[in-house]
Length: 391
Image 1 (cartoon, one colour):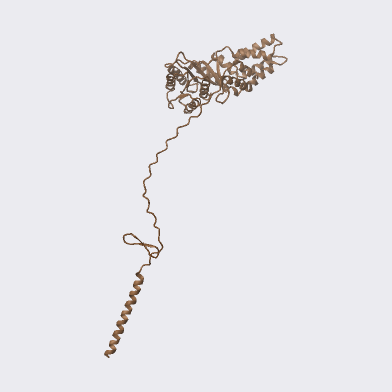
Image 2 (cartoon, rainbow, N blue to C red):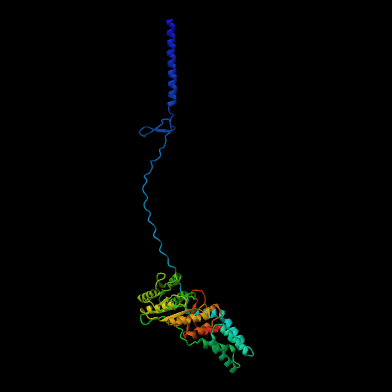
């Protein structure tokens, strides 16, 4: 009995021992980590190579990152000035004057010659001649004068060439004896001072730029004054005209006193010792007396610096009798010394040359022939009459 109990006890102890051993093996198998594929590090971070693994080439340590040097901003490129233009000379302008006018004004002369060449010049024919002249804006009094002279000469000189007679009488009407020279020089060392007046839309600012080109072509030094301060576009436009031929433009703030800008322009011209100062004045509506007074003020203020040598009135040749009204009003505000007719090539209404000269007693000095930069030419009475006659 005791032996049996001893055997059972031994079997129980062996069984417990076996169970404990199996459990230990299971736990150990679960906790053992798998080996790293290539390398591992110890607690200090030192790499320890697997003796059986092929040698592994360690990457180089990262380079030290240095702060980038500040990038210097590029200096703005110096603006390249456009090459200066060389304006056209006076001689070639006169050639083009004849060509342009002959193409546009010839209808008037051809119409008159057709009437005067009729076999019988009766009253109806003379009325047609008179109507043709009035349509061309020659004016009532000059038209009546011309018709009477033509009737008298053709009646007395029955065999005379109608074209030759008409040319002589038209030339006398345009008056080739008028002094049409531009007064652009001052006395002694003083610059000549040219004021350019006229209503907006007649081409006043453009005319100032074109006159500057004529003077530059004659090797004269020029300063421009942008005194039409009520129109920012006019100031900018005049500056562009000056830049194209290397001429300085004196400007003021928009809405500034026009007289003060004109004064500074003449002052600058005197300082530089230039030959001519050309001032573009405000071109307000001619029926506002206050604005006409302002124009007179510009002239008075400028003359504190230097005498005004020329006052040019710019008229649109296509405006007819409206242009005559403008001429009268401006001549009352300032002493107009010359007329510039723009757009003369645009219609057959060239008779305004005669009308405005009769009205003001001052000559047409320049005529605009088109939109080109050099489409402004000195007025030539002979070339104009020949153009009227179409040749």
